[in-house]
Image 1: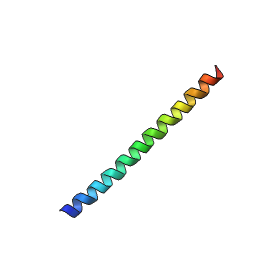
Image 2: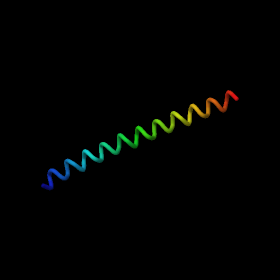
Image 3: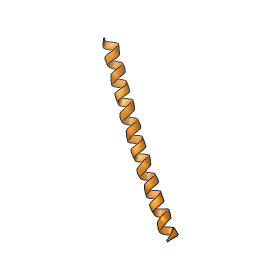
Image 4: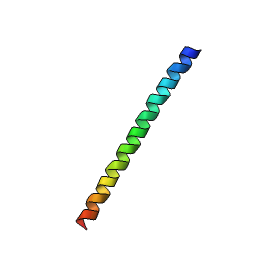
Length: 41
């Protein structure tokens, strides 16, 4: 039981790390695009 729980926890942590990284990457890309547009104005 505890072995299984640890495996599930590891999978959840990996999943959340991916989600957080994807969210951060998307956010920074949007910020870069906004800055480029502001420089063009």
